[in-house]
Image 1 (cartoon, rainbow, N blue to C red):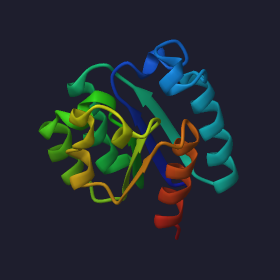
Image 2: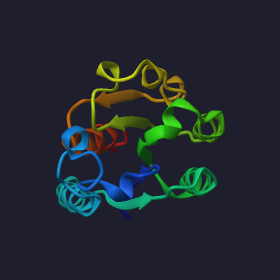
Image 3: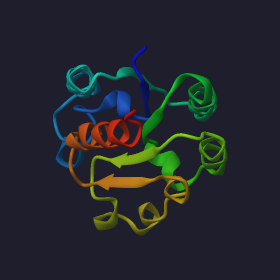
Image 4: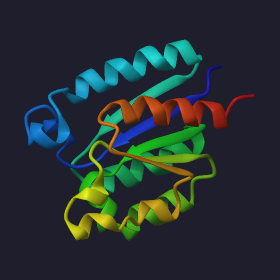
Length: 146
């Protein structure tokens, strides 16, 4: 059975391509899922690609990943800067976690410079646009290779 990698997306990422394209670009979340699906097939890993605007749903998926996933790639979006609950859920996950941000959060407002998720993440990718998802997927696949 193929290793499964979860890609979890936080609030407002369902609006990717429509919301602030000058910051986040014109690609949609469906485009990102397609690209990640292609790469997952090349890497020989399974993929579960999910998005929610609700913190509790993201936490439930992280809990599910404890039994179902080899690793997690996560763009927590605004929850990056606010959610100790997501941090605690990620701390209960044993596999690698890669944090992804489409924009370079360090060039933006100061409140975006702090990440709770980074306290657990094995790596952080920021400012690479939507390509960061594939970079994160590739990294988790390499960290979980048999």
